[in-house]
Picture 1 (cartoon, one colour):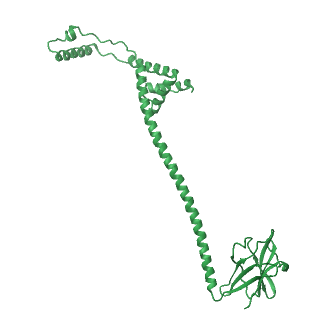
Picture 2 (spheres, helix red, strand yellow):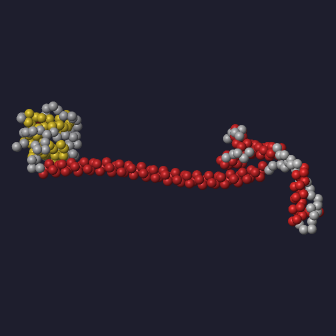
Picture 3 (cartoon, rainbow, N blue to C red):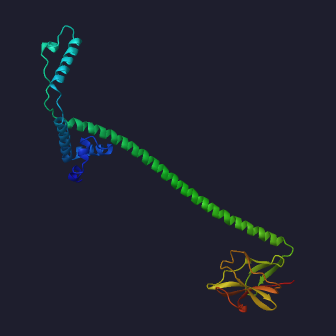
Length: 287
């Protein structure tokens, strides 16, 4: 700490004149204990203020002084029967009070300052602990609130997914129960193992879905593509998701008067025309 800068800051003079704040008084008491330079400057400031006060004092008129002393003597005699004003206190004449300047006692004032500083420190510590406790409680509450908000957000998202899934299942059930819905079984072609995909086609709803029952994972860089045969011409119905084996029920574009449906293995992203040597399943539509 730069004690000289602190001494020159004016805090010591404000304290000696009784103008320092509680915090400044507390700080000054602490520094006076720790730094001899600060304590010396404090003592000198207190002595200087006392000297100025005594130098500025105005002596009372002589007649007023005599009246005050006589009144004091009468009060003393009245309090002790049998004694006159002149014989009060063991017949000793009343002595003139010593009016010479009395030296100040900075040590006593410093002890008072230290005591007040100690009380202020205890109060400050208590207030600090209370603030810290409240701050910790607020922080814990904020953390718990943030965690709850995250849980609510996750539950809301999950609820939305469940609702979407439920709506899709209701649509699927309605389509399956509709008497206008036709099911076309796409069976595996020779060499395609036990692949199986069902197509659901509804001309009244203008809706079409495929349901993957068994379909091997496509080779790397390849993707399944659905085709509708209309008037003898293959019509692209789009590529199946890469995870088609896991996601079974999927919608695809509706087409009027299909003759058949087929799925081939094409380069990832699909082809403009089907690769007939890569056909996996085929199902004829009998209307």
